[in-house]
Length: 302
Image (cartoon, helix red, strand yellow):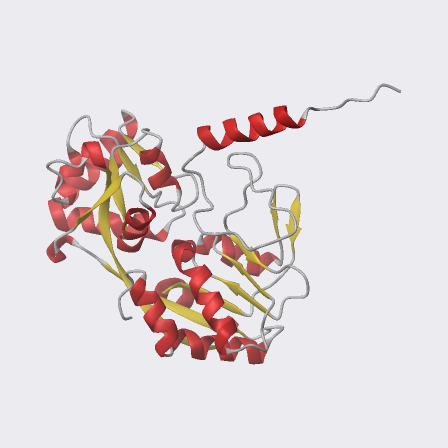
């Protein structure tokens, strides 16, 4: 039998090439420590699943736009409640998480997850729609939108109206499955009426100057970082986070007169597997430490 031996130097070279090619790929947080770290950008990379899959003591589904908060939030929750050390969290889009709750499972690549959450967070409208599923709900944070742009394309960008410029490539959350997309359309109308909305969402989409996300908030900054888009509207917290990472992106704040506001709420599932842990987490989330963490990452009071 012929043995196939791949030289270690070749494996290292391939890994280095992948990291160079995908240097801005998530995860942007620090992964947890383990015996082997096999996170390879662009190849084996799961940025929206966090923590412990072995017999978790608490399971939380967060709306995907809160991914930047999770490391600090869960670490500090464990410090405040040391009886919970095995926590599993997901930060997929809230609509996908809602479908996971409805169907009971989700497959990502070759991995099937049949966990159901103890706590689910999303925008107020979605929580209101799912209200019969929860034993308790609470508002805990707010947000607004801003413009994120490549550093070399940011000059002269002051308003949502500027995204309608011919030739400016716009990364835009898809209203078909991202709630922020529909809210941004509201903001376009506030800033420039139906004509601005139609230019960005219809005309520029047809001619290729507006690119709609396929599924996740992370796509907009990645399009800009890899020079496939010039600018786009995002949650304020996402633009702030990219600046803190040191990525070559800038944030342009939007005037209040054309901005929109969002409220995030958390609900404890009636069929939660860990009801006491869920209550403790909700108390932490809405308490002084949880609120301070969200303020640190740019979220506003609910």
